Length: 452
Image (tube, rainbow, N blue to C red):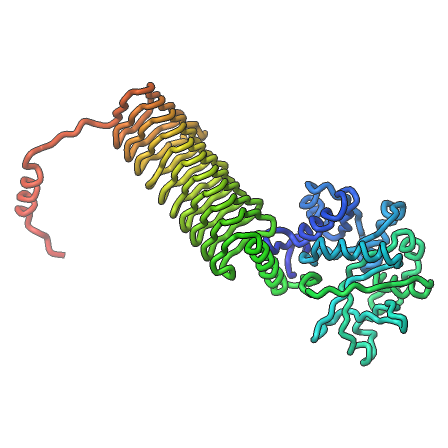
């Protein structure tokens, strides 16, 4: 990867590669029965995965795939049932495939069932060798394969389901008699076969499920495939996505049916979008919650905010962080909200900044209004009561409190509390000087220009 970040923490489809794999594993069982083997820079992997409640096993020295499992003997060897082994850099393996893998091994009584796939132009993966009865008898790596074995199209994906007690009974038979001097997990297939146990392969039709990441090019491919799969799932569930090849939706995003998503939209993180919403072209929504029938205008940015039912936001609006926009509220073009609660039915339609503010129901915020929430050292709150009318170009210096149904005259600078039902005027009285402009022009004509 040519990176200072562990490979499995590189992101595709909105999550680290290993997060995809762990979440799929947790879908099969409880988190405390999922174990992640970590090695170099393992503390970063543990920090990322700790919230998921999984356990960790330390592989202090990397000695191969077999060794990565064997170092877990202390905590794993006492567990019965199936031992499923996954790669941390194969993010597209599905829970459905793993369930079928476990089911087949359990019902067949095989010592192991492995995932395989068939590719017309096989990469440098191990070949799956079957005996005369159809059982898998060995995995042959490319470097050790004969020309006849290289002609085999069935490839080992490196994902296994073992009978756990049998695995640990024979684990010490894995040796390092190979050019790399490592313990290969693939050797366990031959070991179990020679011990008289049945080994099966489960071929999957979609080789993308076992696509592993080794460089940035493959990372980009995985990102595209994960997002394509997500878009397809959403469309089959009743979401309209116009030009889906231009849209980026993270794997964990949830979107309700009858929502329409226009081109070049990005919906990222743990975002939830309700039903019958409309997301305009170029909008970006991150870690936010949208209710039903929310209208997001083109090129609107929404981050870590909640928009309740029937809200309208944009176009060209920015909800920067930690906002709550209540039912039927309206946010127009070039309006920015930060840590603001906009009450039900309230409106800020043009060119406004509302920061660290709480607005009640039915407030009208005129164009050019700003809350001055920062004094150079601390942030302060602005509270505006329900029904208040904020005149255009008002400047509200926080901390400030505007009473219910109060009016602020356009162009006012408000530095004191405004009582309910009051009119606050915070500006200099207008003075007209008749003929001033005409006199200025005449005086200018009397001045002789100086040549340069």
